[in-house]
Length: 454
Ligand code: PHE
View 1: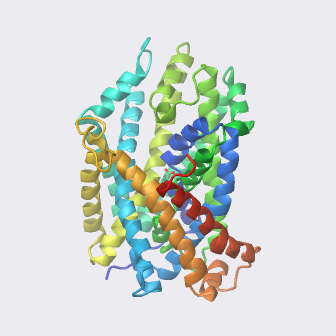
View 2: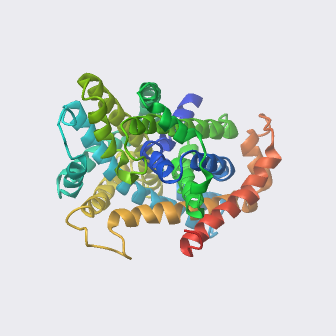
View 3: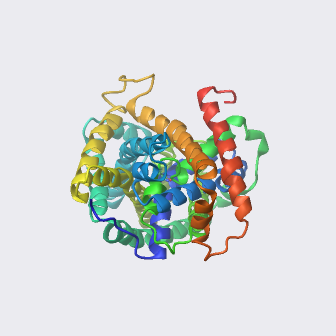
């Protein structure tokens, strides 16, 4: 039996959990969804779902993790021996492998764009077609896989060092840097000529664009952004101390994550509007539209264009790394504890499996474009399985487990640290966990199976 690590400080708990939450989901996926979903109206709905659905699931994960004191599967085995609840843990570890594999592909692209901006390749090219450059890069059989491997290696090196010396230490270094770059870039883009139109788009709700599909998209985004539903926070909270305040930590993580998502909107839309590009650009927003923006806006001021693009991709890379570490940890903790392996060996196994699965995802943009399973290429298949299936179903099971199966006393003890912290609105929290969150999640999930609203 290997000894379990633990976080050394409350700040470490918040920064590591916020690091897991803040990622490509905030800076890449959130603005894309906002652009498609009618700006401020989408943001309003998203905020409601964070509060009513995703935050209760986060609390459930914290309760399961800290009382189970084990990896995502081990925690269920300990709290409900011999019961089928373990399925939630198994889905979590499986989800961990899948999400790490496809996420690291996009993170590898980010690494490439960071290096390209550092070496000035995104700059000063008149009439450059960034769409063609992006397509040529992602469909190349080798290049993206090399960047994927490099990114996985970075993740591996942090996870291998353990909880306090690896995850906590690097979160404490990377998160402040990430927050400073975010605020700096937002300040910068807000002062650009024509930024007002972007700000209006973010602040003025256009309710006509809200369709049921947009509502459901906002729920999925809330889950993905807070990393809930696949046992990632069960794993992290198994390293929390008995003094960690669960409700306060959850509220802080939700606030920081939401702030970074909204500020990312304030970085991207004022810039995009100021050069007159359509905000509804989809997933290419960050890799195709933004390089155009950097080029167009700063053709007069090359150094500033250079700095802006370099800082932006560095921000994206840091955010991706603090998230991928947490995905890796779900699987590493399981393999190390379940098969009694050293952390180093477990981490190596996870990295190798993810490299193989990730390479399949990467190839699905190029030579394996026509290889499909159930009508999806590997990248889409993994993305779909995690965000549309494993996360909602896992979240639903966890709220039911904590709200209805676990002893109410144990749940309250966890929420109040054995009665030493008073939690205002405890009853309201219990209503959210028992009723509101499961009902809401059930609606998203059923809609994915039987699309009534699209
Ligand atoms: N929350 C991360 C993001 O926003 C993604 C993530 C999903 C991280 C699941 C861990 C587990 O990018």
